[in-house]
Length: 171
Image (cartoon, rainbow, N blue to C red; front, side):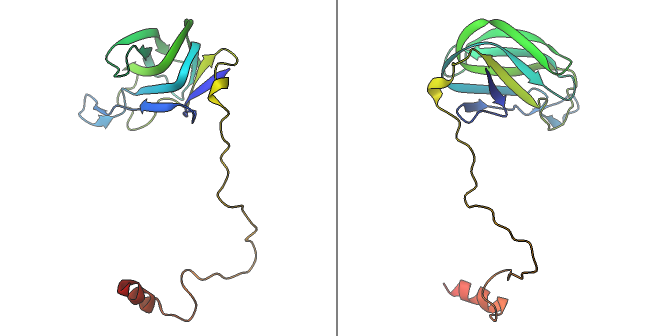
């Protein structure tokens, strides 16, 4: 059962997503991206699948041993060259996870995400206690607007726009 880390599952909490650093030419770049996610509760994970348009380079998957993120434990490390790529580790219970691009193949890749999608592999039923993901529903229903109708841009007809502005300033 996969859990989406990018784009992020709404039940998870994003701790940090990108680190802006200057590339060798001094241009701000996202070349050392770090995606750090906290889960609502501990889950047993055994790997992840990443999708990306271009080779990424060397990536490290880590979990923080403390809430401040001062001590890290490496779960897996490898090069992501062909999409989709899989990184695996022995099934481990984690409450957070960080995907860290350590040595990018294209360090000057400016201001863009390396990844199209990242999914964490979990055993079936790991996220059942978190509840279901609420569907996104528009605030009001969409209705048919085609046809030859004319709608005013703003305000009632017959009142000049400057007069409307003057009334707004008087309030």
